[in-house]
Length: 243
Image (cartoon, rainbow, N blue to C red; front, side):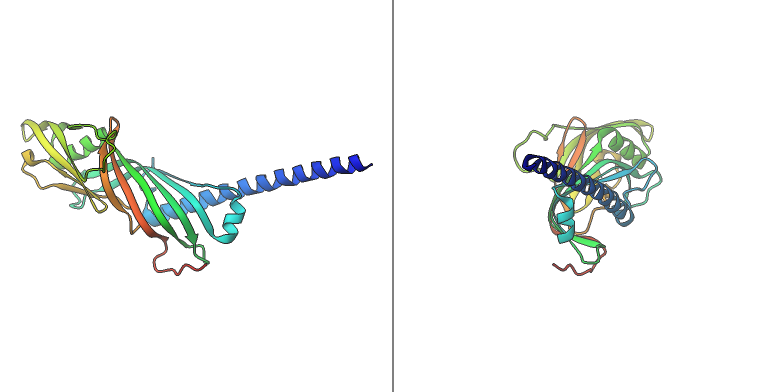
């Protein structure tokens, strides 16, 4: 009889544990979707028909973290975003392939409409083809290609804030070729093409306040801007965060 009760108790514990895990995973899935929708509404991540936003709340159990309104690590990813240049030039939009933010030590307000992240790191990735097309539209040039002078993604040193690029194409009925530069400044990407005779083009990337570019790297696939920030408030501005 004793062994039978031990067996029943063991099965009961396993079933309850499985139900708890299932409930926990369902809860975290719903929370992921809820936070992604909030991010879309606040930061306009869903600004075209192909854009997407996902949120991944790490750690287990989720329910314990939710009750304490404290999360160790949250990943927010958005892709296929559109940014307009500051001059609002015709066709001056830039497609951003992906924004990925790693939020650490996230404390949620009692009203659950804002949060503060102790530290944030991340990347903004822009493909060379998308950058080339955007620069071409700004210049009114055709078949413009923008390529890096060198690849810096394998450089173990600090990321640069300005990198040199080569440009080729046709502009104002003549061949366009020469050097240009790309600069990461605050939350803006600046592309300068001296050979065109036009002022630099600036594209702001819509990021939560308190985040800025810590530099940029050039890779085979595109330009990668490094994002960094400390004590970053997310969501409603000015909402007090309690413990």
